[in-house]
Length: 417
Ligand code: ATP
Ligand code: MG
Image 1 (cartoon, rainbow, N blue to C red):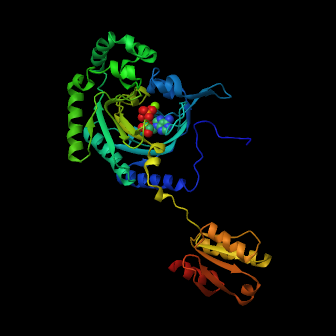
Image 2 (cartoon, rainbow, N blue to C red):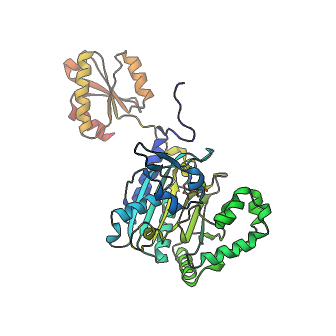
């Protein structure tokens, strides 16, 4: 084989694509019922859109970005996530001038240079939502409930919703100090990455999966104990509202997100049926980001669902191998041209019609009809052309009926199928 796909990317082909389309349709319908409108943003941005907002010392910026110089010597990055480009677009297009909350959703590919493994890819797809302009925790509850509705609508079960608050600029420094005090005499047990993180970004130590680090941080003080009054009240109201909306969730005080821009609410949804890469969706509030991007201070909250993480959880019965409603099998050149015209007329009425281009025997044409799952077949030979009558064969119940060779006659029968 001369060419092969790159490591960590996928070709998504039929019939698998029908599962993707099913998810996208369900999610789109639910988004619109909550007032979210679709946006489509570039997949590449100036590198600095990501570096400052996600955080210079985050794993994404330190190790995972696809960054390159373009021919004009600009530093360009393929988006590793959707929120930073969204906030860039929000500010650039002055979307903050519209009435709040402004709600948007997106679906598309993200790129991270990670070690490929089950459910972890270098090009992966996210479905995400962002709601801007409101800092009321009822909006946090609403968006988390929407996420839950989407995951439920596509049939996912045994999901864990974990929620926490990671505070704000006011209260987080006190917490970081307490965490550093706690970790100080455990530095020797931390991995080399965490040794570095202890200095540059100590919260990140809470996220490390290395067993030694997991053990060392046991008993560390929880952020939720250090929240200022505003963040504490916000978190309490969020929990109350989630209860009222019947969104089952647990509080996980050691949940930290891999992105620096989050404030207050942070959440993650994981599945018990996925093995080690178990996070199916994650999100949080980012109240300082719009200002940092040069817009007016505007709160925001969002989430992203990882498509490749939910696909394996979805019932295979959704993979449809549909075939055409009608396959026209012409015998000879004249019949082939007539077939082309009839097919066009039926397609104009919205039917899926194929013309067989193999000029072979009736037997092999019928074999092909079976292979492609055609629901009905007509064979068009000289006799049929002359008499303007044709036998329409129903491939499911094997019945045949003679009909006039005219699109409106065929249409009547296809309609009643
Ligand atoms: P993880 O802990 O699995 O690395 P993350 O915290 O880096 O996830 P986010 O940046 O929060 O992920 O992205 C949101 C969702 O996107 C994740 O919950 C996951 O479902 C999905 N996701 C992230 N990275 C990948 C990847 N490399 N391949 C497939 N899906 C991914
Ligand atoms: Mg990650």
